[in-house]
Length: 160
Image 1 (tube, rainbow, N blue to C red):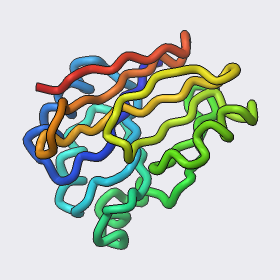
Image 2 (cartoon, helix red, strand yellow; image 1 turned 90 degrees about the vertical axis):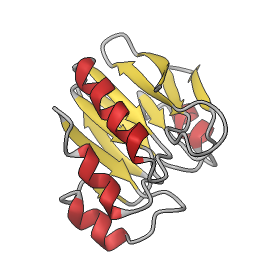
Image 3 (cartoon, rainbow, N blue to C red; image 1 turned 180 degrees about the vertical axis):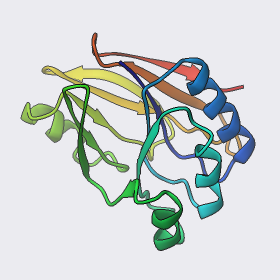
Image 4 (spheres, one colour; image 1 turned 180 degrees about the horizontal axis):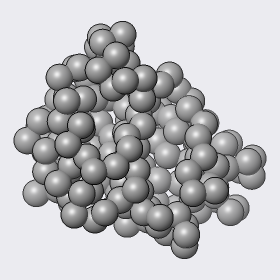
């Protein structure tokens, strides 16, 4: 199973639309957002996904009650623990405890955002993925990640 990972969209609707199309073309089975959607209207674009969506709140998210409502309860406080395709996943926004979670051996995958820098690495047997920032409003590339949960491999892709 392939999953899509996105973070730090910061209300950049044109890039979010492109990311949704990218994930649909890749036939991902689930998309995970690692925080900083920002406004509730951004969640509407994610409703164009051909798969399920799960997200967490980041440090810049505004109206959390409306974001939770518009996402039909699919945006959670962090850390959020979930299981997909038999893989235990820890989802958070800030990087403070990423290495400790990976080092614990309790998770197959640790996903985070916030830094706006892509990061794919393995600590012990845990894959760590930060997809970078999807917002093109800020300097640098707009990126997302695709993870193969069978092989536990990730790739970073630029959204143009």
